[in-house]
Image (cartoon, rainbow, N blue to C red; front, side, top):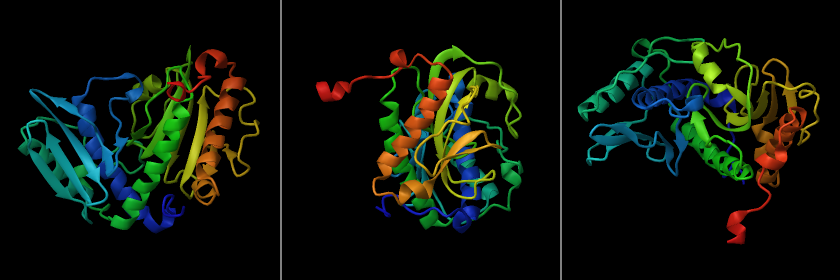
Length: 308
């Protein structure tokens, strides 16, 4: 069980996390720059694979390409539909060096792209080409993080399947390096106040244009010194934060305005899937019931696959 849900003590891999977060942003921004805008920035996200993370196919006339992080062989692979491939080793090197390698490889494949070469959602917004400070890469730690993502992606997908209303894919937002899934009530929301570091308010307002109950997983930070699951509602309905959610280890973080469940509470449980699903379901119910969502119309009552 411990191997399936590996330990992720933040202090032990914090330097690698800070570097990897910026590397992933570089790759995500390539997808962002070449993709048509899809509501809630769904065109910019990455996805968990059996080896790491992927952009999925990105159109670049007349061909397509994708960029994959491979955390088994520790390389970044850029492959085109014309059959060309470039590979970059993942090893300790600065963000600036990684940025140059990625952009050179992309351009060498004949792909024309220019990205906003500065990190988002980070207090330290040093441009990528100037960032020599972040240069750590612990291969074992990066692989453990990806193995955790594989498990979380699987459980999040099972949770997503219970909902027939509008729902996001299970995807990784590179700004916070968090894997997330979001359910929608179908009703418009009041304009979001914005204020996310180094992220335009117009992007934030598009993300929260409609009422949501959103859940995710991230390595920790912002007053949470450990890997954790989170769940929040926007707009937050009256009485939401006072709702008793499950399991017992879950709590409401007043500064983040989110329910938090430590990753270790799931990892060390006898049945990690059941504990995580309990957190996802109970926090969703807190948002839906307090927010007066039409749950009968939005939720799936049967498993169609089981009936087929």
